[in-house]
Length: 339
Image (cartoon, rainbow, N blue to C red; front, side):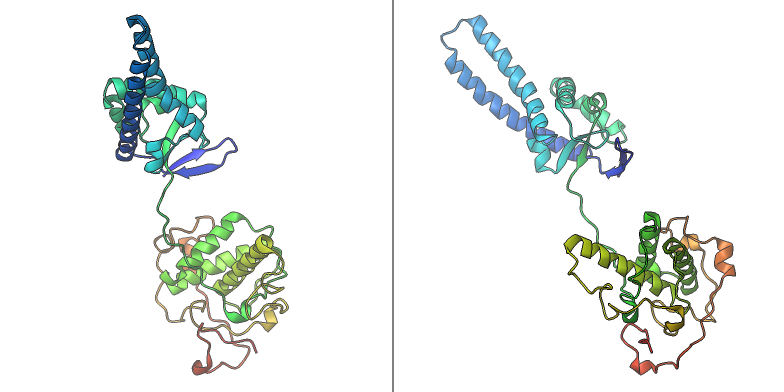
């Protein structure tokens, strides 16, 4: 991927088109251009049969300039960088800042393309594209443009596990407006990868993220709720609010969605005992944690704990405030329902 910066200082990740796809697109454009040029030339020969030689030569030169040279320029200008070949292979010409090209960009690309593509049979264009880090030919360099891929395969979407049923909708009163986007991204990355982490390392990272989230919201996190479950419940509450803003206030329950919707916010004293399962605390006799840099490379360094903190802050299970529910009566998520 190539990072481009727009005039508003927004970084765009675009995939530059490489030589094979560009060569195929140019070949298709040349075939169409030659066919149109032959058809127009034959029509002009028949129409100018009564003219003298000088007039016929002038008409032939005008047809060559207008069709093989002016035709691609006009097509790229009107289609904003999508010629027939580029449209067929999912390519597009854009400016260096990611915006659509204009007439001056297409004019420079077309004028230099006559030399590096038509007159040298594409040799100069191929060499320049191979040397360039982003696959640009000389016309792109002088015009300030870039050919990018528009059709990019989309990978599988990361799955964020839902919170326990007794936490759904319990954080409807939290003020999430001050939570930075970087923290939301770190929380989402942790929740999608927490099952791949060492239990103690995952608990340490979740505790750090929960502390940062509580500081941003201005409300303390519940004491007897595992940090990962707290993070998942707040993320679900944010998604519920986004859905209500996008589709109307009638979507979902008043306090979110799920079994706990409409209930008052969870207080530290009313929190259920620490459960077992995906959001549970690690076992007391678990082995030493693995290095954080090897376990969660995708979490930003601003929210990832250091090696000393990971080994020094070993969590201990919280004492139960209510009788433990027998394992046979626990729900499928592994969490005990609230008392």
